[in-house]
Image 1 (tube, rainbow, N blue to C red):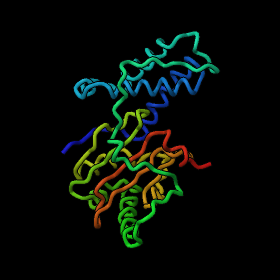
Image 2 (image 1 turned 90 degrees about the vertical axis):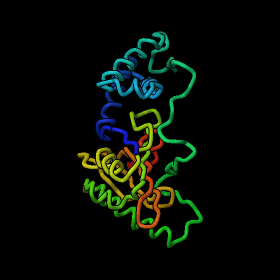
Image 3 (image 1 turned 180 degrees about the horizontal axis):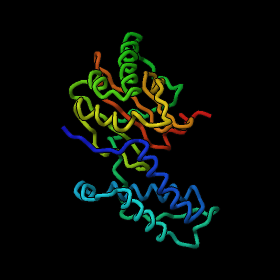
Length: 240
C-alpha cells in the first residue's frame, strides 16, 4: 500500500504564495508570476522519485528554481503589460497528479449529473456527511471508520501546488493523509456541498475556495476521495 507524504493545505498554499511573491517582486505582473510558479512546479514534477525524495527542503529548492526562471525570462519582455514567454525545460508536460481519464472534476456548486437514482443519492449523502463530520472534527479514527479497507485518495494540484503525485491507498494511510491535508486548518471552513450532483465537500478560507472534495461510495463506505486543489478549477467555488 502506497502512502505519499503531504504537507498541510495551509502549508502548500503558503508555499505557492511565497513563490508568487518572488515573481511579482521581479516583474509586477500577476499573469507572469502565475506562469513562473506553474513552470516551477512543472520542473518539480519532472524530477524522478529518487530526486524528489533526496531534496531535504522542497520549499528551498522551489525558491531557487523560481528565482532561476525569473533570471531566464528576457528583461525586455518583463513588464506588467507585455506577455512573457516563460522558458520551459524539455518538451514533455508535467505529469498531472492523478490520472485525467479517471478524474471527476467539480463542475460547479450548482452542477448536476443526470441519471442517478434517488436511493443511491440518499445513501451517498449519508456516507458523505459522515465523512464530512469526521473532517470537520479532525478525527482520524472516525475517518477510518467510514473508509473501505482499500480506499484511495488522489489530490490534483494541476501543477500549481505541490500536491501528491500518486494515489495514497489503504484506510489507515488515507485517514492520515486527509487528516493532515484537510482538517484542523485555522480559518478554514469545511462545508457540505453538491459536487457533480452528489454530496461532497468545499473548503474555503476568507470566502476563497482552497479545495473541493468528491467521493466514490460503495455500500456504507467511501472507496475513493478525490481532492481538487488546482486554483484554476476552484474559481467558480469562491464566495463574494
